[in-house]
Image (cartoon, rainbow, N blue to C red; front, side):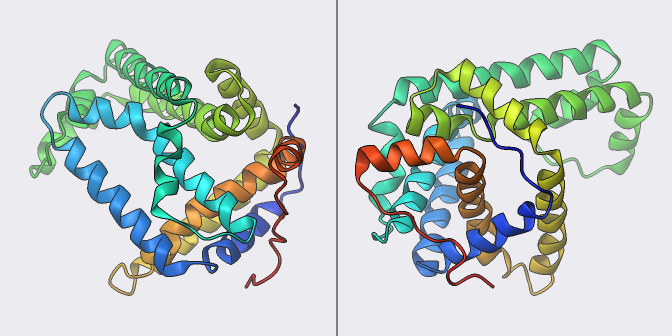
Length: 257
């Protein structure tokens, strides 16, 4: 299962098609994501274990959103029950993926501390807002190498995790192999990924202007477009899954901007 190499303009198409998928059930998408964010905030507020547990469960929750996308793609209804799909099948593999991501974060923070970023890492991992700008300034001063190292390593980790949950759940790929395949897919499609990311940054600015209300639309499109992106880069995986399930494909261009 090899990822496709796509043209840069495809990054914009993913957003258009993701918007079309969102418009199939806009109110339900907003409700589902509000439930996710409230649950994540509540879990993260639990002392000591809350944030690590949230990281472990994140791939399973993301899979639930992707299952919702697949249901809409087939003309079915989006349901709250889709959120629990990752806790019903391949749960161990998805939690393993979350564990690898958590360990990766800790290792990156450790590497940053070794090159002079201890104060900065302390602020990032404290979970408390820092009101004194002088403290932040002191932490950043002399931590240039740590910041550069952190950005580089976290970027690689995010690239390896972008498609990994879907590959684990939909295609039964082992967690480590899924991360390798996801990283290879991202690097093979740097052009469309840059267009995709730059467009979202511009849309994020627009979404923030009307009292943040635009995020009620933009945030669901982040997830629906991620599903479209996965299906576009791994079309063989999608076709095999449809053959097994007997589902009909949604034509993303219908209802786009």
